[in-house]
Image (cartoon, rainbow, N blue to C red; front, side, top):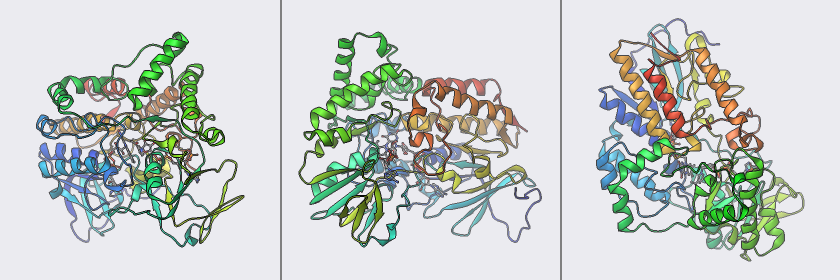
Length: 542
Ligand code: FAD
Ligand code: N01
């Protein structure tokens, strides 16, 4: 523990803000707008050169959302909702980034954001009851409130494959893609990783490259996107009914416009179940994963959906050995985040695309010329790492966060993150986290979850200021109860059966803990609202 019980010597007076926010993605942008609207002085720090977060960094070919664009957008401003027009069912990264820029311009957000600046540490000064925040620009500022809007999927994971620095060609990570794009024309490209990023980018890389070699560790379940341009009638109808649409999204499990099916797959006759799977497969998108209410809790039910997708893979992929290698069998459907694709499985019918199953032929080393597995050296011109992220806790643990009595957050989280409601941590007064571990976040349409968090946190701050409360933090008991509740909820599902990033399993040495709240967006919102109504039950406010 660091000793922060006494105020450090002040060589100069750091700039003082009411609030400092880390991150200028959709979480940080809205948090800034809300806190500023309450009359607070706010400084946002963003590592990137502009707003957008995920959509600023992930510029790989094929990057787009897999939540319908009209739902993957802010609802807090009717004017914004009405003036913006999405062009496709699932918006591309450039379009979502344009939207983020539009929001920043419209609400004048950039004036309070310091770009190209990484927050390195935040230490709670018990004497002054403020956070002292330092950045890589060597600036130190203080803030009463410290908000981590650092993102769930913002720290790229590049695996420590021996020889990685020896490769003579360029390497790329999907989450840090060059802004000018990459031209793979005429090149032999290796893609390592077949999660959502790999599955979106591989068909487009394959179209451009002369040869594409895909290194797959675990096959994934992927659903067809059936993306389309949005016609004017649809857009007009959505805009006319936005309040109802958003209301539905706020109270169902996934934060989207959908009435959750309460039927269990296990109770439905096989032919009817199959017809429903076929219908949802043809409709495209993630709704397939919510075809029945027991898919994520009952293995037998889950197998009916998994088998349906396995059949589809066999029907699409012409080489039966390749189809078998692409077919997931080692974990239940949707316990890793399902992917949504355009032409992914069919890409493996191309003569210039090959699949290397690294479960049977593991990557041994990266050489000057390419990727060497146990059996073969693949000479390539470029390597794409679609190897994911140190999800949910990575960006927070990258910052030296030190709370009351010198408690180091990274150490407190060594066996897994500990928070109350995924919003605040005992021992870290006036510090809040947005849409990350311990909340529905990545199990939902993140925009719905981000808005819920930002509004709930800013209401808490506003109420505390009005009540003359200086410090807000959860009690240890409330936090312990929440951590237990998260685990119990997850243990009642099939999620712990997969070695997923939800479980921290993609990062060597990371504790295996199911990270998000799995009880659904609506239930979570009602719980948070009841906590507020009961005078912020579980929080100490002094
Ligand atoms: P981010 O957008 O990740 O923003 C966090 C920001 O914090 C980043 O810009 C980062 O640079 C900055 N930051 C972090 N640490 C520091 C530091 N120490 N100092 C300064 N700055 C820092 N969600 C959906 O709901 N639907 C989708 O379809 C969907 N598609 C996705 C596709 C991709 C490729 C990825 C990677 C994620 C996707 N997500 C999707 C999840 C997505 O991350 C969220 O929807 C949302 O954009 C998160 O916003 P955020 O502001 O919370 O975090
Ligand atoms: O990352 P991932 P992602 N050697 O972790 C493999 C969101 N998102 O960037 O499965 C070899 O899912 C790893 O293998 P395995 C969405 O929430 C959304 O693709 O761990 N391979 C896996 O195949 C998503 O879930 C969209 O065995 C290694 C892949 O790399 C999340 O972001 C698009 C390896 C990583 O898959 C993350 O997706 C993109 C190693 N050492 C992202 N380490 C939408 O469509 C890892 N892998 C909306």
